[in-house]
Image (cartoon, rainbow, N blue to C red; front, side, top):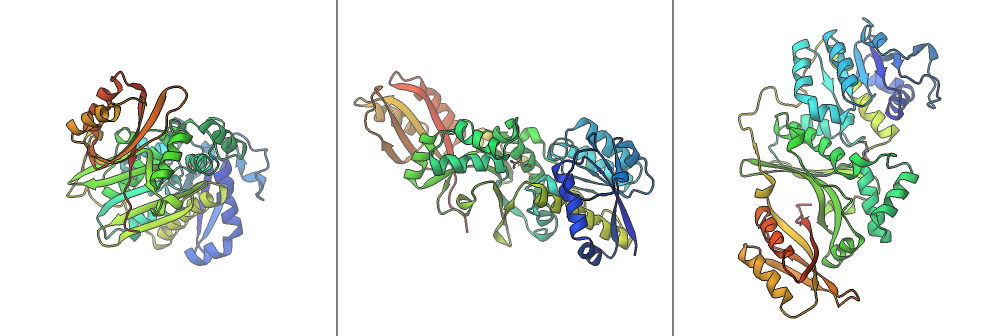
Length: 437
Ligand code: HSE
């Protein structure tokens, strides 16, 4: 039986998950691949803590270079996270002709172009199924399953922590801070959950998805990004009254030859398939021109689902090895740059429905002043709720609009917020329409 030898750098949660899959499903994997995937070495600064998996402790080293320099190792798995050091190990491994598997979404999103060029130069594979949506095999879906399609739209819930927080806020009416502290207590949120909350984590994942869906290494800094820390229980309640919930969405859409790329909290109709994706679950809705709408749902994080994703990449590369080939599919699924490269649609040019919550004094003529400015900027109101007068003299006026251009919306809100009758900065959310499924 041929053997494919693997070295693992970074023995944390996902690394332990990968080892567990290789041990538990060893026979099944051998049968599927026709080769034995042999874990030869594991490098981590901590080689003493128990990870709950049985391994030969002579495999362990604190020196990752032992893996990079080991001529017997065919595949280096990078699960250490961070960018600089991880990049260094990956590039050295590639230079030595080793294939690379990584779960490092920040690295792929920010330095993917360079890494893919280097993989091509050295004739090795680089695989990163675990970098997006954990156990959901969305990378392979885009590279292979939907390869016959022009991708028209991707709408996704790609951050489990944010989705968990919004689920608790919606279900129990909790504040953002209360829901965040529960998420921390239960281990969903990291001690420093900044990247989950400010949308960066989802934007990294969306960058990778866009590169695969549209065939060019998309720039992370081109993803427009807003986090969930501005979502209030009040807006969640109003959303419910209008028949919506609020989700942190990662959106990529082809619109007239441009691509929209944005991560922000959005109103999602309650009968939209993504409205029912709750707790720490992820989901990716992809619309292909021939498939129509498709949906992929599952756990986006955690030792076992993410370990499964890493091992699926090992299996893929090991299968190539068995056939004596490499790079059967290019890392971003296009063998050459697509004939039709899309350009980025600037955020102020997007057209969507909006929700506004104005805070204004309750006196005659207020609504007409606000709607006058909206009308003058080509923004048409779809529905309005005004709540009764509150003790502090200010009332919320909430409204849904028909489709409007973001630049017109920004211009209007700037004017409205300067009106003497408006008491606080207006709150804005973008509103999604119901999709095909
Ligand atoms: N922190 C991520 C999340 C999981 O909450 O979804 C790892 O990508």
